[in-house]
Length: 156
Image 1 (cartoon, one colour):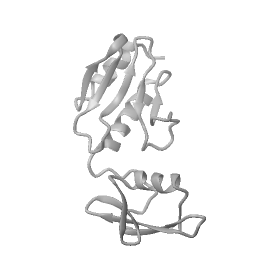
Image 2 (image 1 turned 45 degrees about the vertical axis):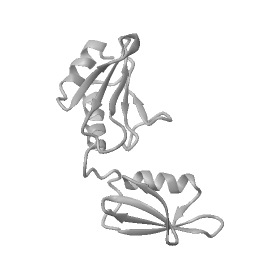
Image 3 (image 1 turned 180 degrees about the vertical axis):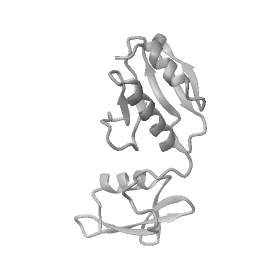
């Protein structure tokens, strides 16, 4: 396991991150240019070596209910990689789900009650419509998809 000082050195090597000292000697690092509501890339890095990296939109990582990846036992290579991916996921023009065909402009989603919602990519946002009524607007496909799935809808 990397020490707190080793983890700090790795994280501080990312010039796009800004250090924010918080309580109990913990440290956060923000990505100020984030295109999403989230700015925290590194959360509560603690002198005992524990800490988290924002990974809600990352594949292949176990996340908690806040979308955070615990990096306590990460190697230097693993820590650098997850931080790079986290920053990329918060950057403009990032494709959140590489398996998704982003040339699609419209999708239909149905629920068990045979109701249909339409997901439309408009002006770099993802809008969900119930008929002609706007039901929600999301900055990424994954956020819109998550909303639809939580509401019991599946892609038609």
